[in-house]
Length: 176
Image 1 (spheres, rainbow, N blue to C red):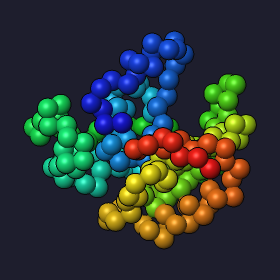
Image 2: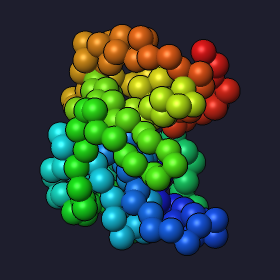
Image 3: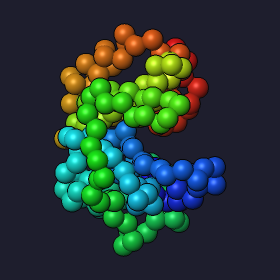
């Protein structure tokens, strides 16, 4: 998420297993918390974004945070910077994330960002969509977005036997 709070400390309360964080894409509202994880992976197309070349200036991102999330009390302009770091690994379309008793398939779903990924668990039919699908306005109007690829990515997931969709924003009560 934004990195306003330390989600890794909450994860450590429920497991003592090693944790690798994997954001659906490298936008500021999905990568801030990565600073609290010793390991994280990103899609190969966004490795440079998180490794020192994020395409938007901090001032623009800060304005979006304040405007969209009303975080002026938690984040001050002089203290804010988009998280940058070196990923431990990269993912590509079709990769399998093996969690032992669960296997998650990586689906490259560009459009919202070049390396946007969804994650599908075939056994349960669960699809984690990040910013590809959610209730509300879907953003494909930045310089780094591509509405045509966004549309193709939505078409890509239509053929998947989805039982439940888990989104990244707003309401989580989307049903198939």
